[in-house]
Length: 290
Length: 198
Image (cartoon, rainbow over all chains, first blue to last red):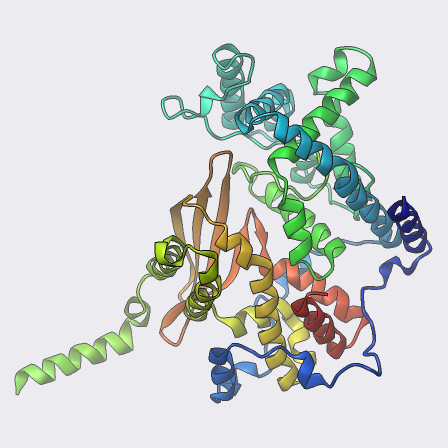
């Protein structure tokens, strides 16, 4: 209960606008002298830096002339809101999704969970097929169609993935989605939005996400609760196969919010640049749409 | 008389005209280093928990040979590199390397005989190349690309791209975000705290 209150306080504090302040504390007066702050470097490093390699440390011209850098920068006018939502999703993951996924993964063996994942991947075939067509990637669309037929008929409705077997080798799942299609058509990503529950996005990818919902079969199967329930189960199953991914991303980051935003931007950029290659999904967004 | 001359000429030829060939192929260099890492990880003598520190020490030595710390630091700071003083740059390089070690050492130590496939080597320029690999696991494959640069006669890694996300670019975005609002000294302070585990 205590932690809930803390979180609410945290969210409020973040929403109130201190969200954009990075975790910087000015050196406190009581802080130990600088030398003590610096952990003893490995001997080899000390030798190297003391060994007169000072030339290496001179001023530089930007190695890639800012080419790469420019592309991976995204405007973030909603940063305070986004940071608050990031915190919300973070708590949602650690308090709800992760415990549920862990319990679920104890009850269900990994093989079965991979099958569930295959089943859902097969179900979302129309998204990849239609978007491959929209991107004029006919080879990809044909491969998707082949995968769908083979996996549905011989893979017990998509539970198995025989299409990826050595004999058939239709391994390349086309990771096509409507946001990507729009990007390939030249629609810019706009600015960054960190949606509660859905995670990193942009206006373009939000439109894409909504568009793709209509290509997802279960939306036509019954009331929306069925669809929502099915999606939640899919995401929990997904999370159970990726426990630890988000944690290590967060741990490695200096500013996790910026790190996740950057992973999203880099990932989407690559997807649009290399539409024919299949970059595998990143486990960054909690319920990031595939 | 003729023989030493020929030999000398050959050596000169190698030194002058085929620096790249002399350094070996980029992929061979990366592969040799990765294999060294795998040897350490697979070494049965280093299996027990008590040998963990020794294992880390050996891995650090390989990292030394495999990576170009300074190049990595420069590219990670980008144009902000110039706004740090030279001692700050030196400290940054050391701190950043410790941040990386802390973040990834457990992942590396957790390696359990996954297969590593070397897919493609692309020369970006005479002194830069990209080595595409993938780690094959039961449920998934993780593509990893090593970006290498030719320095002082050997190929050194200056960026690692995992699942299409560049390590250097990811940290660069974070650092430039911090440096847009803070002084270099504060960035170093954040890194010191990160290394100390706060």
